[in-house]
Length: 226
Image (cartoon, rainbow, N blue to C red):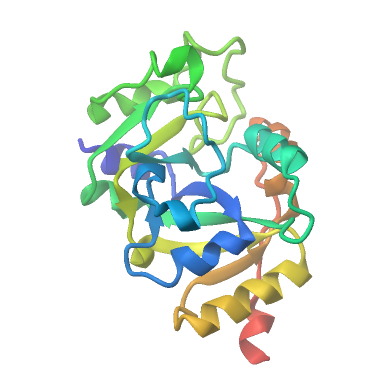
């Protein structure tokens, strides 16, 4: 089975990548979409993880089903930009795995400076094991099947994620959702769904999925009427 088929069988519906709201102007203005940090022009560069301890600057880091909210909260705390303070989570269609080279990691890819990154995507089922060697906690029996045992497990997509594979954008409140809608309208990509999902921006979702529950994500259908 391909990595795509393995993940679909487990009920995985998407990959996630968080970014500053202001970065949507670059991501949505080009069909190339989301670029790996090494491909971003220096004069527009605004990279969340500048140090890239995983040594994978030519790849876009994604998590499975939900974002790495531990790193997201850290990035939000350390953000010194008082004008552009808002963040969004991009939902990426899983079919990207059928057209891009990828690697995976059962934990945060920066752990051990990339020592646990695996280029054999056929082994990706291992991230759902009851016991993951890189993670201290066993998988709870009620945990959603679609979520990896370690919530920081990653898939690294080579080069870029074309705009057409961005299926949704999550905001933490209505105000940001409206700003996202305005930006999508400018770039003619209004088919991308917008969601309000405050728990996705915190670590709250982790406890929920371990008990078999999904965090609330409200699709902003009302925005289409405005």
